[in-house]
Image (cartoon, rainbow, N blue to C red):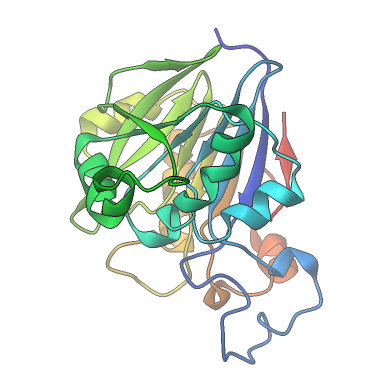
Length: 256
């Protein structure tokens, strides 16, 4: 059993963020702060351990906003840039705390990081990010500090992506399909975070309707929708349509 956790949504937006550049739609011009969405990322804290899931291009801003002065590890769901583009920003943690940042991901994603950030691994230039790489596999629990996580594999179109279960909490972003054996690892969750990009069908992402079908089947006590695009609609309008136990997540939302 894990210790009590505080889980904060650092970002709840899709790859373009919300508002999207050049767009003047109702969502992108909204004055509701819940309609301003940085790229999706999650902060998980116990009293002794701090974990970040995905560090996209808004990572520095997110760390400053939430006063995250120490990170035990960063975990990656997959290799797309909206989930990895902030990796260079770990350098202050290296400088101040004098430790290489542990990175956890599937072996395939670790190899992609080696390619995307070849200068980190192929140069001895001073001041580069310092990291240690740790491969994780679906269905095989792993430990960071006092928090144990269970990786769960789904697919983002044809790309394997990892979600994570911690006791009765599960986080699944950028998902479209999942196999029966991995679905079984989600059964019994009490709180589910699931992506819901928009209303219209998408080849690589769950729609709002599809996400609600996952929620109905898993029957969690509470569910939160994330990785949201401006095409889904204004936060207040969408929230009013949802069942009582389902909510749109928003940047800065913290759940216990």
